[in-house]
Length: 429
Ligand code: HAM
Image 1 (cartoon, helix red, strand yellow):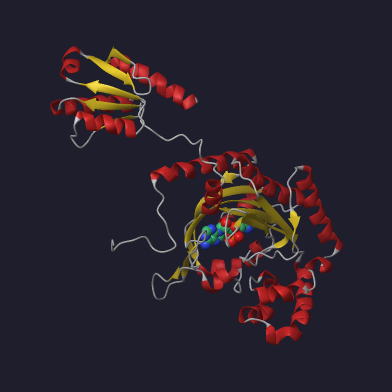
Image 2 (cartoon, helix red, strand yellow):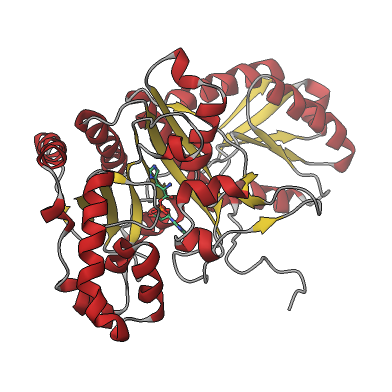
């Protein structure tokens, strides 16, 4: 076995698969622009305390999943970003974006790092696309980001997705609920698992999120956050649901949905895919008005966003057979050299073709003509251009359409114009 293997939880993406990524990324970018979101790119690592403050000290991500390092002994600890929202908000605050325009709509596609136990659909390096709407978190803004996410899914042809949605209320609502949960769980303290005991102290809402079946039974009888919401919180949520209904977006209200990051308030949502196993969340998000203040801003900034796991999205698309129609990238012409003495001349012609915008391939390993033809077919080139002694002497070249086997003889200039026109037509298709 090869000594150097990729690290567990990471994977290589080879060209045949990269075309799928490009396809999805293109659909994401097109729809983000349709909704007025512009792309932002933030650093892959940030100071660790940004995530500790932003995501919350009691979350699994901050507790045990961050890849942190300290470049020099006295320096501040840094962390490979485990999510994007904190970095995007940090960037917006640092540049004082909201003083330029009150609402900013940003989207991203980028790599994230979490030290989770790798399994199907769960990696240590993974990719998200997502959108953050800063400066507004009205029900219209919430509905807008959910609609964008669902429209991307629809444009990709995804089926069997389930959108679950909940409201976490405002800080007051949650404080009152927190107390109610603590009183409910207190008599069961001895039966709680270790994780839940810790959560009971620090963040009892997270007990609702427990995957332990023994805990789930207890959770079923717990008070519902819904019953602790004030009227205004409920009205907001209902307005969001109304917008979704008007756009034919199906959803299930799930009062136990709390999400694994601490910055959420009011609406939170998650989308699951029936095609994924245990790790079935394909995307999620919600409102996070207090994040800006948590990061040192003098006041809250209304904000809402979502992120979708690209790998899980691609797995779902693969399982639903949605990749059939993606054309493979192939060269328009393969230059077949009949005698090796003409290789330099052929190379010069390939260069001229490429300069003119015609994608051209040529053998670089001095292989036989038969091998070159095999290669042209393997690459699915549309044409083969033959370069032999006669062609070199007379200046007219045989150009073969590899799909129809039709062959024509042209001067090099004519070949160039003919192929250029083909290229232009391919671009239009
Ligand atoms: P999240 O739920 O932690 O939210 O992640 C969003 C999505 O990223 C998940 O639904 C999943 O598809 C994917 N994902 C997460 N961890 C992994 C992993 N280890 N391997 C593969 N895929 C993974 C957030 O990150 C929030 N920042 C979303 C957000 C944006 N909220 C507001 N704005």
